[in-house]
Structures are given as C-alpha cells and as structure tokens.
Amino acid sequence: MNLIILLRLLIAHILSDFILQPNLINNAKKGYKKDGITKISTSSQLGFLFLHAFIHAAASYLFIAQWENWIVPLLIFLSHFVIDYIKSRQKKENIYLFLIDQIAHISVLFLIWIFAFGQSINIYAWIEKSWMSTRLFSTLIAYIIILKPTSIILNLFFKRWTPTDMLDQSLPNAGKWIGYLERTLILTFILTNHLEGIGFLLAAKSIFRFGELSKAKEIKTTEYVLIGTLASFTTAIIVGLLLLNPPLI
Image 1 (cartoon, rainbow, N blue to C red):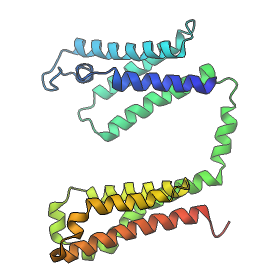
Image 2 (image 1 turned 90 degrees about the vertical axis):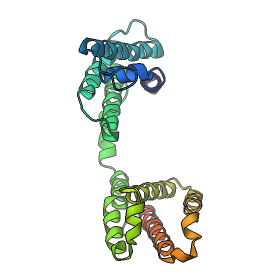
Image 3 (image 1 turned 60 degrees about the vertical axis):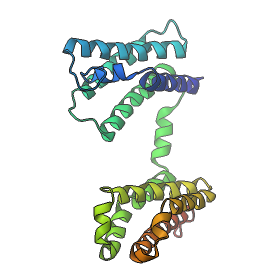
Image 4 (image 1 turned 180 degrees about the vertical axis):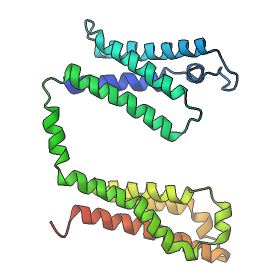
C-alpha cells in the first residue's frame, strides 16, 4: 500500500511537470511569453508559478485519493512553488540545473511518502543495511572508475595518435561523453546479466561509424576509432567481470 502511494505521487509529478505543462506555462515561469523572448511582468510570472504548483498539488491530491489528507497536496504546492521560483532566478538553464530541480522535487515527494505514509516501513534499518553493504560500495566504485579515471587514462594513452583534423571536425567533448555512455551501458549490461546488449551496442556503434571505417584512404582515422572503441569496451568489461568475480573476496 505504501509503495503504491509513492508510485502515485511520482506519476502525478511526471504528468504535471511534463505532460500538463505547455510551453506557455514553461516560458512564463522563467519570465517570458510563449515565444521565449518577450519579457512578462513579475506578477504574471509569479501567477504562472502559482498555477503550475497548484496543478502539481491537485494532481497529487487526485492520485493518492485520500480526500481528508489535505496536508500532502499543501506541502507539494509550497515546495514546488519555492523550488521553481529559485530555479526561475537562475540566468542560464542547462542539464545540471534541470537535474537538480528534478532531484529536489522527487526528494520532497520521497520525504512526504516516508513521514506521511511510511510509518510501517523501517526506513532507518534499510538505510543502515544499504550503507553497510559491500556490494553497494563496490558497484559505486566500479561506475566511478569507468567514468573519469578511465577517460583520463584513455585520453593520455591515445593523445599521441589523435589526428589533428579530427579535433576540428568533431563536437566539443563529444568523444568523452560517448565513452561515458558506452562504458556505463556495458557495465550495466554485465551487472544485469544481459551480455547480448554489449553485442548490440558494438553493432550500433559500428553502423554509425561505417562511413569512417569504410574509407581506406583515411586509414589512420579508422585505426584510431577501432582502437579507441575496443579499449573503451575492454576496460568496462574487465571492471564488470572483476566486480562480479572479485579475486580477493
């Protein structure tokens, strides 16, 4: 019953923040008209922030369907208004601001769920058990290793071979983020026992790189791409296998 309520709160949040939020409201919360360029008054901006928070509160109230429990939608309304107001004061919007905003909203829902509906859940025992779990920390270390440390090592290793013309033709930091994503996927495939996903990932990357790999006259670029892909895949696979079969434990 408790978990169902949490899921209902999350569904209400997703619907209200993405489905029930047209561009008109989204831009007005930031202080602009629908075109995203023309400024609106502060009172109008606050009005749309109020409206958006009210939609969240109303959706949550309908989804949990506990009509006598008015404190939950009230808390959701106040928290959502404050968080979105703080976000609207930021000059630039980027992926980090978006993630922080969503984490803040979901954290509020999670806290409401714990304290308003989770009396029968020993959340402290669960946290203690998770915190003391060797598996948890081993997994976190594995994901951290395949990200920045591996990226730095591979970059230093391939620096002497990087074609100068590739630096001008590629997107800034695109190769780094491709490596992050592919190694994260590979490690996830290994930990979830879906090794066939690695094959599909390699095949998909080969298709996208086919234009470069098929040009015999650009053999240096072809070799660079192949070595980089195989090195990235190999690193993630080794880390994943070591996590599943630790030699010292």
